[in-house]
Length: 204
Image (cartoon, rainbow, N blue to C red):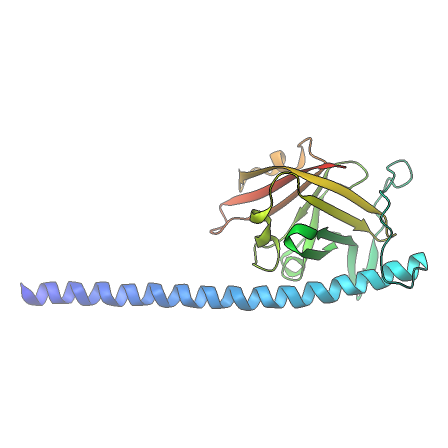
């Protein structure tokens, strides 16, 4: 009987050690990916700002702060930099987040920065996705209603938004994500990937 309990105890000990080891590996991996994302998106955002400055003739490296006019800008202008398409960049001052926004989304782009999933700031239905890395959209959980969000396009036109609702949607709720009445939606997967943390914003 003692041998039986000893065997069970050893099995449980080994299983626990494996689980703890796996958790440590996962944490370290996420930290590495988060650091890589931070470095990558800083570089990409810098490239985008350089391109905006070139287009606008603004050699200060800063973009203009006036809001975009939907009547003038019906379509998002895409800039191809190093063979990748970009729409502009996202800024959320309260969480010190600034990320380049790819024109489309795929896993390769998501590992580097945020991606436009649907819509446009000029049709008031923009949806932007990003990985939940600590240096990226993992910061979204810190937002509260009233926080400011800005999207700057490739012509240096900034559209301002204010956070109104933070909700968690089912991972399969694609239609609910893209057919909402919100002017801007930011989303990222929750830990485990089954749901989506979603930040809903209204245009200022």
